[in-house]
Image 1 (cartoon, helix red, strand yellow):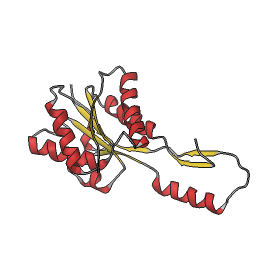
Image 2 (cartoon, one colour):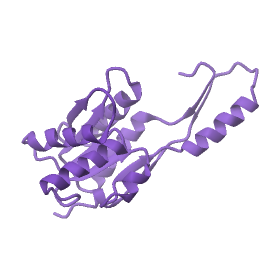
Image 3 (cartoon, one colour):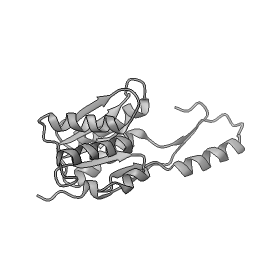
Image 4 (cartoon, one colour):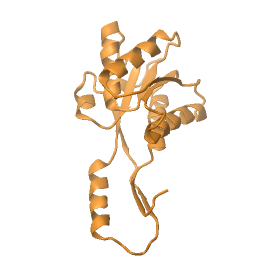
Length: 184
């Protein structure tokens, strides 16, 4: 609901695309690691989209791990530990961002949990650290450069029409080895 203009993408769709990707690759028992949902509406939307889409696809209820405070790899490790210790035997976990997902990968490595063999991991942000981790972590990349270009053009082109304008650029899921298709 923009005041005048909105240029971006749907955070809820980011969550949905992650859940669809997991389900499409054979992952059925999903978890989601998120942070700061008490005040971060974007985090709320990504998590809600992930959980809603998993439910729509007929998957079991998503187990959510939540932390408040600064988003760091340590939190990803802690969330992954919580999810692994839950007894739910999850086979795929999405994270609010790539920083948390890389922390989760560290925890999996520490415990000898094979990614993607035992569990798949995915994040959001399209960060270089996710691409360079081993295995590379699947991520949803926002169209940051295009958003910047359109925002700059909108500022330069200040229209006096008063009409609300919303430009949804979508986002791109970058599938990497961390969510390789499951073998049955």
